[in-house]
Image (cartoon, rainbow, N blue to C red; front, top):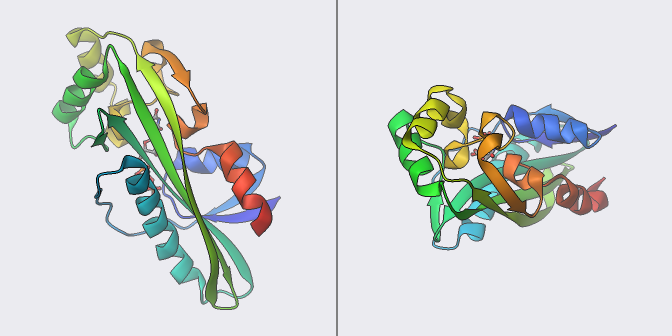
Length: 193
Ligand SMILES: Cc1cn([C@H]2C[C@H](O)[C@@H](COP(=O)(O)OP(=O)(O)OP(=O)(O)O)O2)c(=O)[nH]c1=O
């Protein structure tokens, strides 16, 4: 098993890394997430970098070598970024906008190599997937929001849960939508392990 430090409190990211054959040690970053900048890919990459470097700094004092991974997922509709909903009303508003059309999900990832007390190398990239959401009635939106599933998720939905019934098509990596583009992560991680 290849050890990796996951700078994320998201249980989904941990599960995805285990699924891909890694042995993640979870050290969540304590930084405030603030989305800035006009370019969505750059925004997701920037947030992944902040989370990764926050934990990489903490790892400097540990002996040996650590590989730290930070990640951030955003939903993009007409070049506007949707983060996590603030409350149920906000979740309903996001879903009214997403239903009946296509949007993008972007996950930014940063990997850092920490060795002998310093950050030796970093690698930042992002992956994008297009998602087509079916038309939803007001009732369907309310019923889904009532499940509580949207509240901790970018764009107010989770493709891997009861929202699956509304996902008509995707183009790109499914795992990018769930929160970690596993194949791209492995491709980039290889040279650090
Ligand atoms: C669109 C979508 C998002 N999500 C999730 C992935 C992310 O966990 C979350 C977006 O929030 P993030 O800020 O990317 O991550 P997080 O707060 O869960 O964890 P941390 O900051 O500690 O790394 O939305 C799904 O699980 N399914 C989906 O279909």
